[in-house]
Amino acid sequence: MALVLDILSWISILIGAAFCLIGGIGLLRLPDVFSRMHAAGIVDTVGVVFIVLGLLLQAGWSMAAIKLLLIVFFVLYTSPVSTHALAQAAVSVGARPWVVDEDDEPTEKGDESSKT
Amino acid sequence: MLHALSLGLVLGVLWLLLSGYFVPLILALGLASVVLVVFIAHRMDVIDHEGQPVHLSWRIFPYWLWLLKEIFVSAVHVSRVILQPRMPIRPRMLNLKATQHTELGHVIYANSITLTPGTVTVELDDDNLAVHALTKETAEGLESGDMDRWVAAVEWETQLDQLIAARRAELKKDE
Image (cartoon, rainbow over all chains, first blue to last red; front, side, top):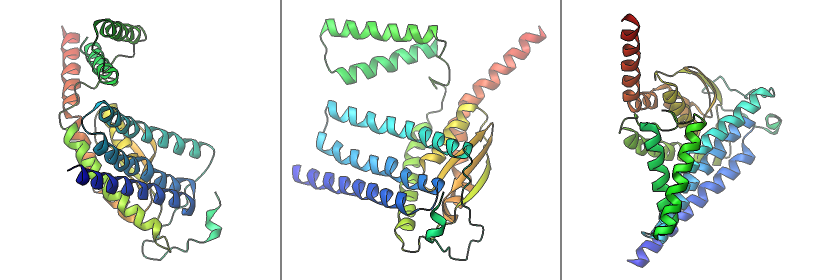
């Protein structure tokens, strides 16, 4: 049983870590402030949830489990507020999102679009 | 009063969960701090239906589950987009109308949008939302209005409450 829990917890932590890594890659690859926020959004939602889920399996029914749940709760409640504040700040200093209108034409995401 | 009680209850439970000590002295100190905080919050006039949404429907719990599922689905979608060498993103701005009737409802909706990877609420002005979406799929997911309806269902009872309060105020005026 302990082994099963360990394995499940490791899988969950690894999934969370993978999402954090992807979020980091996205942060670097995406072209402008607004699209980069989406990558950061992966980290502070699924990344956090899966890592804490893995830690919960390790903690079992204990005080630590309650604190871990509170961490998820507070992160999920505060992160959209900070993201929204960031987006507002970007708009107020005059950043405009880079927008693609056509749906079918593949985007040429080149280096020239990464200036914002 | 209901809101103050609710705040006290939340603080008390939180304190018990975080402390884990059940010795009389410590419990008394905890109770004293809870009372002090509720008193200060009352003096600051920050105890209201927004801080203590006791009127929200129980549907908030199934909504959380649904939202977690949505978050997971869009996280996988956005991750796939990011990892593709060509990175097929189609960033766009959407203008949405929130159908909720309370400010709290609008905020829940706007924050849920931001929480879902691939969509970020850039502006919230009354019931108009400006949303930045990363791909066509995430934009369409939002335009389908599922989330909007869910949040409207969650705040439904708050809304009813306000309607009753407004009606009462009207009746009072007539008298």
